[in-house]
Length: 201
Image (tube, rainbow, N blue to C red; front, side, top):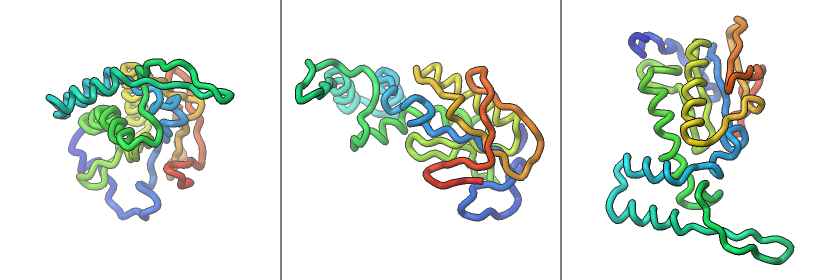
């Protein structure tokens, strides 16, 4: 794919827009990946935690915590019997954002290592991400499709599903027509998309 610096953008951009003349795929994981916080696979999280250097007593503490994690359902003033939790991290939990970052970082690293996505000079900015809100950014439609394929494969490997019907491709500064596929289905294209609460056009 050549030197990333050669593929970069050679002009300044407003702070409200990461890139100009680019194609972006906005995947809001809580909505579009069928609530990935709830689907996060504990065994995978423990494996990834070990791989990044959480070892010994710290790793054993995490393992014990997830192995002994139980929940109850409150309904009409009553509580169900406790049942074990085998997946998911709790919404609003102090550890939850860190756990999700450990879970999703291998995907972001894979995209960057393959040189997929936009660069500004030598700085990689192909996957603007805040916790579970991911945007795939590329100035090449074929590259964006490759990014989608990698993300789809990662989702299958990690037991969550990306929803093509709730995902959006935002094309700016380029009138060429391209089709994008996710899970074998066409993704809608739009003139505007919301990313991190901001309307992008």
